[in-house]
Length: 376
Image (cartoon, rainbow, N blue to C red; front, side, top):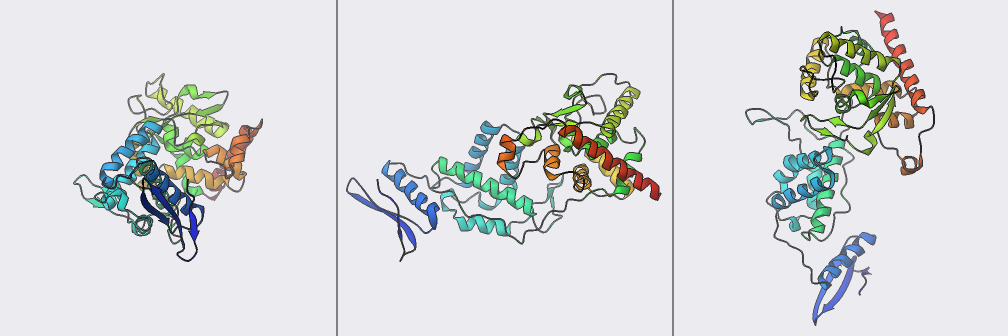
């Protein structure tokens, strides 16, 4: 078995191979171990008689890739993200290109220049509200491209995975708008029943839950004032296990959150719903409908001159807590991963931490709402 040799003069890795009196040279200009592995991979494939299919096009391979994603992770958030980025960005740009013809430079130029796809209207026209994609969106696009290329390598439609794709430093950070304290007080001053999902919004603001996690709550999820988050309802109404493994967590409920749940219970009883499978059910006591909640929230924000979607309530919670709660405690509460894998792998919940974080939440919320009330 031959090994790759770096040619300093030519600035490339090289393997000269022979099989059945037939000679072939494999090279790569990629520096470091990545280039050496790429050359060795192509050499081993050739030596084994395995060849790369250079004819398959992106628009044929991508549906196969999505089927593989579905088999591995189901049709949850991960699948929907890969489907969305393929449909909106990758297929329109490279659909008719042969997969083997795409270079690292093609992919990087794509990331550097891609524009927002906008939103499709009912008449099939698109509305584009932003000129540039945010840094987070470009990062997601890069991850999808890398995942797609890894699948392509496994299918022998390309030889190597791109190794140097990056998100431009000039990419704009997406704004994470929040409700200001006075706006938060307006939310908590609305009378019960003013909006069907009012208490759900209040609960998101008081706990930092994602909207889908809040809609997915069931009475059996709460025991001894501890909420176990194990499901989410997405915008299509599909029930999923949550955004990721960090999303499945426990949250201790103190007075603010418990009062909201009590108000919601009384509200449902006033509507004749004595029992429900959901804490925040729909109009007919059925599974909550995120799209309806979103439409209602837009009515609420338009009335009071507030911008954003229900997700803004989660951002509000994080902003309120950042000066009073340790970062690690915030991450655990909202279901974000730790910076260091060691903390996640070997860290265990210390007795009293859930109660402590809930106590901080109550203190901050009480202080914020009282301060606003004093100014009126």
